[in-house]
Amino acid sequence: METYAFDGKILIIGFGSIGQGVLPLILRHLGTPPERILIVTADKRGEEVAREFGVRFIVNPVTADNYEEILRSHLGRGDFLLNVSVDVSSAALIEYCQKNGILYLDTVVEPWQGGYTDQSRSLSERSNYALREGALALRSLPLKGPRPTAVLAHGANPGLVSHFIKEALLHIARDTGEPVEPPVTREEWARLARKLGIKVIHIAERDTQASPIPKSIGEFVNTWSIDGFYGEGSQPTEMGWGTHEKKLPKGGREHNSGCGAAIYLEQPGYMTTVRSWTPTSRAQRGWVITHNESISIADYLTVKEGGKAVYRPTAHYAYHPCDGAVLSLDELGTNNGVLQEKQRLISEDVLPGGIDELGVLLMGHAKGAYWYGSRLSIDEARRLAPHNNATSLQVTVGILGAMVWAIQNPESGIVDADEMDHELVLRVARPYLGEMLGVYTDWTPIEGRGTLFPEQFDAEDPWQFENFRMS
Image (cartoon, rainbow, N blue to C red; front, side, top):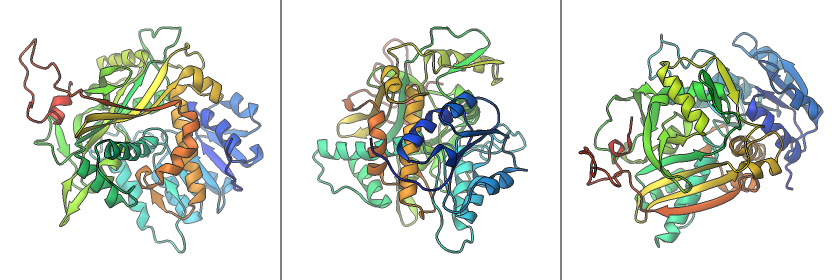
């Protein structure tokens, strides 16, 4: 068991399913004694887990009015703030950490409570695109001396999937006979994706974990944070927008500022589905839930000439959650986005045999499509780490890998997952990811189309977004 020494203090904000799952991994691999770790969270969820490991636990919801006092009371230069909360502004925490020499990591760039659904703000302003732009703008803070590392949005996805893409690009290059030296810079990775002909990247996930208790009417069930899933699903549908796309989709809108790598739809993610593919399900229906990686991957793999983007893949999440969550999304849509009063996290009571298959599906190259990622069963997850199911463990080891990278690169400033050393992060995470596999397929989103009913689709270019879209 590999360990990585960290001598500072660690403050964990938020302690839902991800916080509870990552704590034993931190204690196992970072060598930080329990007395140097503190949990500050909004409610008593997870208090018994903190007590099990001898870690101090404080119920004190972090707000715009008290966050500076909380951070000042518990952290100093060289310490680490791990933010796995909801409804707490990432930008506010990052700015404080940048000014005070504190390492930082979150799994999603969050606004203050209500930011996702604030009707006084435009859809563009409520998007992950805008949240990411706001966080990246903090790179220009006037600071003296080195800028402490702050890792944006790094769990499984966003996070590990950006590193999966780099591995997948190298595999495709090898298997198509493209001689290539492993890229080092952002520009080299983008040119490799262009050379290979990658047009579309899905973060393609299938979760087959199940509870012995079926979902009931008026209940939202899920295998990871219900608050987080609901918040993301209520944001506008977002995707990195490829240069091969012929036209904007119905309801599609461009942002009028920022990097220009993404678009959004005038409908929430819980209402938007696409055709996709994973090794277990083969063809599947996936929800386009907005995530930071949809924008950061497209931005990172953009090739520009004369200041104009000449290559960029379309990139977005295509998520088929557990069956109970599928029914929950259906009911959520029926109720026009009003969250069910009853909520249940499927974690400790997952039936044996279920898996979470999380990977990246790279399409448009010489071999058609290639899925690369992690197939992790609930049974193996339980053997590997306490207080995790298959879904949460993929997230928590993504956090662990990124924390190790930040500790070893403490003066890197504000970074996306795509800008990190993918080999180091994956080396830390791999022992917990179950089976890592790569599978080629000749599937396309127009397979079998127009045989039973007349349909409009682009037969000349199967990789157009309009061919993927279902709703």
